[in-house]
Every structure is written in structure tokens, then in C-alpha cells.
Length: 84
Image 1: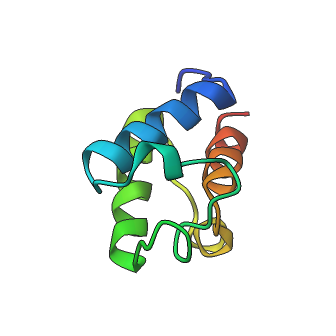
Image 2: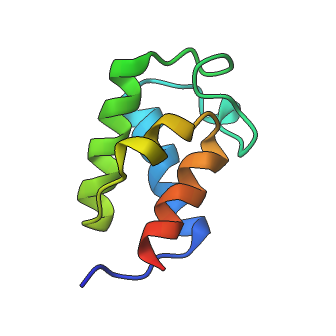
């Protein structure tokens, strides 16, 4: 059974991944930031984020959900929805 995380905890973990692993500036990571346009990530980075969030939550995003993700908040909402 996966632990129930708050949206804030999910955001904090995502931010940690983006800063520590992908070297994104902490100040650029806001909920409305577009992963690809604002944070300059590519599809490989997005897959890496998905894998790391899966390890954090013990839940896997479906390919359909994964394709919808565009912003930092989309990641938070998608992961939070898995835990519901």
C-alpha cells in the first residue's frame, strides 16, 4: 500500500529531483512552469522524472497520463491522483 502524500510533499519531492538531478534553478520551479518550454527539459528528462516519482510513491503513471503532463503542477496532480 502506497503512503498517502500531500500535494505539497509531492511538489517538494519533484522540486528536489529537478534541482539535484536535472540541475534546474530552484527559483524556476513553480506550479505553472512548463517542463519543456520553461524548464527546458526533454522527453528523456520527463521519463527520468516519472521513474523517480514512481520510486517515491510506489505507483506508476500510465502512458496516457504521462502524455498529458506539461507543467510542474500537472506532475503533482497526476501523482496525487494515483494515490487517491
